[in-house]
Amino acid sequence: MEAYCVKCKAKQEMADANEVEMNGKGGVKRKAMKGKCPVCATAMFRILGKA
Ligand SMILES: [Zn+2]
Figure 1 (cartoon, rainbow, N blue to C red):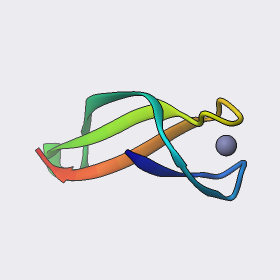
Figure 2 (cartoon, rainbow, N blue to C red):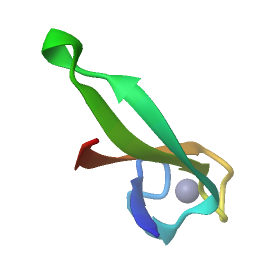
Figure 3 (cartoon, rainbow, N blue to C red):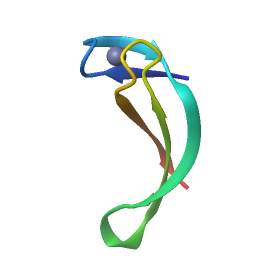
Figure 4 (tube, rainbow, N blue to C red):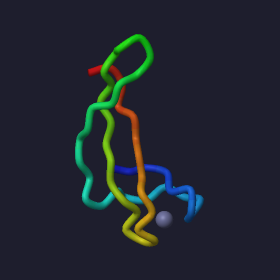
């Protein structure tokens, strides 16, 4: 999955991507993908929407 890397200032293919749940406003759970940039290893995050 591609995500935007703030360090590279470009989209990169997310490495070690894991699906996580995060709490949004009003107790709504949202699914997100968490991983890291294959180039600079900066943490990447991509919100997928409502769980
Ligand atoms: Zn990067």
